[in-house]
Image 1: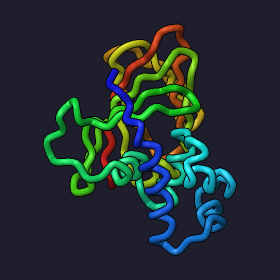
Image 2 (image 1 turned 30 degrees about the vertical axis):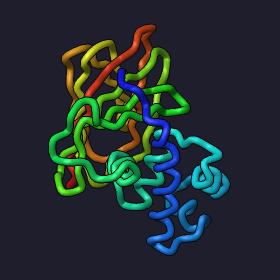
Image 3 (image 1 turned 90 degrees about the horizontal axis):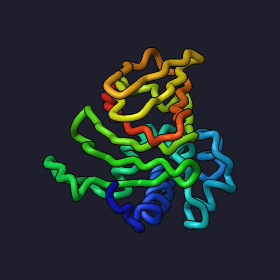
Length: 188
């Protein structure tokens, strides 16, 4: 997979602070709106802690953004043509999953993300992450277990699943091999 840009964490920290400041929110207000501890937000903003995908999704939702939207703002707007070498890559510090932003622009309703989920790892996202988006997951290799609203689906290479109404979702790789999948989402 591609090299992960070291500046991403710094950009994320700066972006979270900018988004909070733009709304004139205190750390306590963002903590209340996101469900993320005030101390954690403070450490993230100071670059003392790397946020997991779940935490970033909660913060993004509080700002009325998708996770990709928050990361896009942290990295800066990209041109319409998304060259493979220029697609931003981010590693979740909690699970080691690697997320490559294939396509995302603030002026386009679709986003495409490629994720490599290591063996025996999972990532959960709150219902609020899916409130204003529709998602389709397409497995490229390995097996992916998706638990959506308590319903468990096991997808193999080539399988896809369109999500239902917003609910908590867990992506899990219960196997001994990496799983790679594409997430396509449309903002509503």
